[in-house]
Image 1: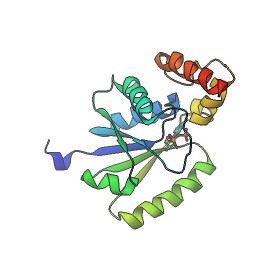
Image 2: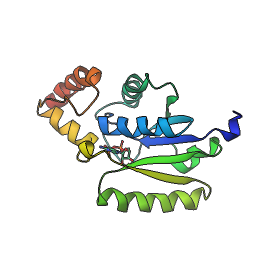
Image 3: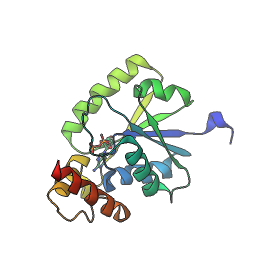
Length: 169
Ligand code: ADP
């Protein structure tokens, strides 16, 4: 297939850390699109992340390595600018609740102003992950709660370790 006909999905987020909810959206996007670029955003508005950008990228890479058409990148520029490098790219986001919708609707309008060709598509969150967010995971980890079923199993020790350090500070 020639490069211009390839349909690319961009799944952006801060992934601090990646959860099974994120992974569910990435996996479903990988079935629909030829290629998925997971973009770990530096995100200037979210201050003091739990994990560094390198740690977040590394965790997303490990969680997605079994999906052959998924790759992981990072960006410190606006998503609408970042997306210009991919012809025909579509932003794919997960929608959990009405509150997500309000925020995403606003973001979509801003993105369209900057880059009118850029489309955003939404996949509804899987029922079992509707209440899952990175902030829930950070909070549970800080209290030493069991993270099984919230994040990929292979990442649990690393998240627990970080939460211990986090608690001390
Ligand atoms: P969070 O909202 O967990 O802090 P991000 O800012 O990294 O996560 O979100 C990136 C994208 O992933 C957003 O489109 C968000 O709606 C989606 N997302 C996050 N958690 C879930 C979930 N549990 N189910 C579906 N989509 C999700």
